[in-house]
Image (cartoon, rainbow, N blue to C red; front, side, top):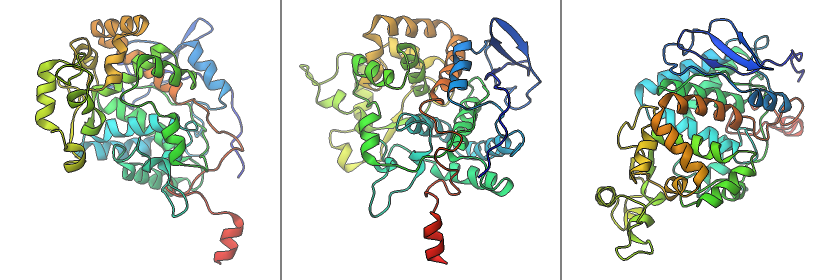
Length: 373
């Protein structure tokens, strides 16, 4: 399929409360056109660093990639996500998580959306993803809306990246422009997911190693962990901290005793087998609002996962946690920047991969189409 003519690269920008966008490139601040979408929900004043811009250039993706070929793409995705959010605010953390889990496995290529087949168990059905990933149907509806307007133009990977951004904003986070032009991958295996995704029991060292493989820093670990300020978790992700820890009372000493008692009431010892779908909130204070309360809980031993508590065991990470406790605006700004950076991991672009028509299924080959006709 013919690719859109490449335009000069535009740096990604953040959306400000005044409805304008600004970027920082080569030391100059540039005011761009007013963006109406998300302006009422944006909450912090900041600029995108030059480093984030140059990363986008290297990845061959660009803000406004579909301006000529599918100008309504982002609005159609936003409308779909917003409609779903009205019915269930859990859509937002789920879509952010989907995007993260997509990017950490073979890059941001939409491979997490592919269904398993009789001959292949896909990423979404790996132990790391099932049953925690959900609301694939929202992505399906967003993709269908875009396909109806612009058939075969916008990738599933980009639809998911747009949806994750919209989810941040709908929950109260800072808006940002998403560089796009990603292509969809054609491989999705459970093993790739199990090999690449950081787990809830990860130590600071394990997190650092795993994120470094994706060119993400210690700061990015702390910042992106802040997504735990909204959403829920299954009991299986943390019950070892309640019943099987190497301590006199079998409880992780890094977990508040009162919090452990509360969690035991929700997740009994055998809950992984008897109540496999049981969940609990990840942020006790403001579970549906995108804010800095996750970090406040963290320093009070209210982090749900071992990987949350691990952020306090590294000097660099602990310092950033403390800074976010003090400044919600700083967290929101940093999160927007790190989401842009996350969205550039190992992307496929130009002639690589494909534009999947159905996000759950790899496009049939010409041979397959002829055979079926």
